[in-house]
Image (cartoon, rainbow, N blue to C red; front, side):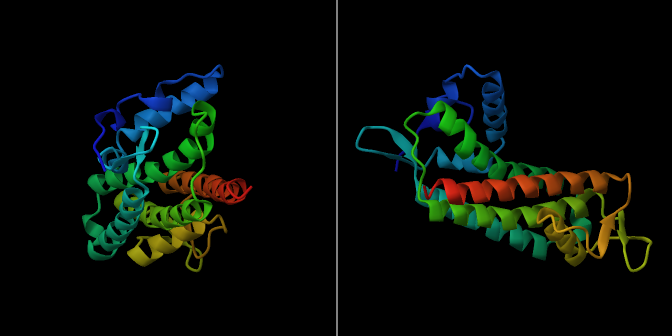
Length: 222
């Protein structure tokens, strides 16, 4: 494995430096390129490059797999071990950054690389599906942490129609049913609240992510 400085997120090497005749593709690529600079994984992957027979370097898949597993474990341990009352702006910032990673992954693989890299060949479909599932579970914990960080008191319990303060179990329950888009269960955000806006964003991400997962499963087996 070798370190390639040109693979650092702020560099526009490879397909990141190419343009399309379609402005919307260029715009999406530039947004993903910018958000990659905040991704811990993108910086780590630059240090774990492998060089193929043609001299072209690519990210070592073992490093990617280890990072995804480790990040999931760390998010889970943080959520379980750190008291909810300690959550705040820092937790919100870290959770938001980590949420960008799985979204960037699918936009990069499904849109950007197919549009800007003619040499791109999809990787093992089973591995891609497993990565998506791991990231899906991580997003449930990350959104739960966001609710606990900034809007823990903006929820209504359906059995007792009154405002309640979320604890970790209730936040995780609400995040899971919202991301899976099965509808609000025993909890719902207060109408017109910030929690309702975040829940709407989570539900939209859940629909799009599930669609991306299905498309990955079908497209890479053809």
